[in-house]
Image (spheres, rainbow, N blue to C red):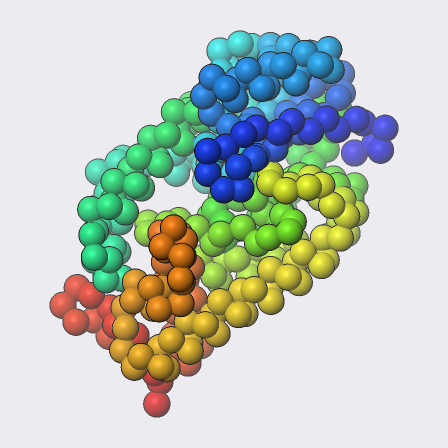
Length: 317
């Protein structure tokens, strides 16, 4: 991407931490938006006002790149489609994920919620189905024009990008890279590591932490001069952020190992309750525990067994 291409940053307020998400307008002859901000009328007003400030209207946006299908990053795609006719790009797999039958998702999440020892399996089921419906309401599957393959260059108007696969936070997460600039979505942020939500308790939930490690390895292969994240400030030291993430992942895995060694036998939910003090963090932290425990078991550092439909983790002897 030519250094002369201006990048305009738009901040959207969120009612949940970290309370702000960001989208980026690239000022070319074919205006391009990377991510589409928060959902709702306030998000739309913010987008329209910010675009007006740089001499554009929503209908002028010709391309929309979506890093991953979460509402705080794809929140205004549907309304942009109503306002104009942008070409919408999303990572490969997003269309299929958003087209998922809710009953199938509910069945898988219920089974996994029981297996991890969740005290109220109906709660994560309701959350997962609600999340699916909200995500595809703002990013309609049939509104995605181009499914972007990971690791292959693709052209967007006069610009060219490569989608780096950076799973862990979300299984289909892409960071869009060109000429040293990284439009990261939730793949990389400062001053914090994004949560390892991955697939929640859907299929693939046990891969959450391994996937996060793979995502950091993928990002490390690129010369990144500046990061434009979906949360937090724009920053230049991608290497330090990647190293911080790896260190925190190591600490997370070790924390789960220590709990199992101390308790002797515990479900993934019980491990999470032991290592997380803040009840508000328990919901997403259990996804991280599931992935960390699976990683430990694959490495032979702990064992697990099913008692009925519930899985218990024990020290490996």
